[in-house]
Amino acid sequence: MPAASESPTTGSSTPDLHAPLREQELDRLESLLASPPFDGKAVPLDALQGLLCAVLSSPQEIPADAWLPLALGEAPRYENDAEAVEIEHLLLRFHAGMAAELRSEQGISLILYPLEEGGDEFDYATWCAGYLDGVDLSEPHWTEASDDEEVSELLLPFLVLAGALEDDPQLREELDFAPGDEETFARHWKENFADCVHDAYDYWL
Image (tube, rainbow, N blue to C red; front, top):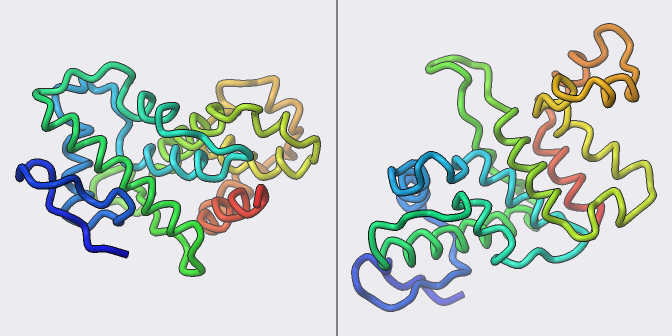
């Protein structure tokens, strides 16, 4: 693979959009998504990783022009054209990097933030909410692309960890968890979260 060119912010040629992001560039992307021009509407980096994992796991290919607007909050107000080019290049390279990680036997490096600064409990809900947004971009929807009950089982960890059962009493009733089961399953899925992501990716392969 050819070496990446310099960043567009330096005024050089377009970078290699297949080159994974370096740590410094990942920090830059995180900063841009949280910057004032996006007015809090761009997805945070953890939700973005979830979104892209679902996009890359979809039964049908989802083009960039379908997920980019969602990632950016639909109508960002860029400071200038150079910033627009920079963030879109970073997003496309993040997508390419996630694709490589999902294909790799090494597995993905999860981006999860602590619920409280310095705490040891992580925010799976934001990551999973991004994942479910990515699932909803699929046409046909995952549950329509296959009548296999396994599809629903693959999505269940993300639904539960996103807090969907709290917002959907009907779904909770349909699942009919025994007392304590939801917490037990949630703990198991957190401990094996990367496996849940890879299982969904592998299913449609």
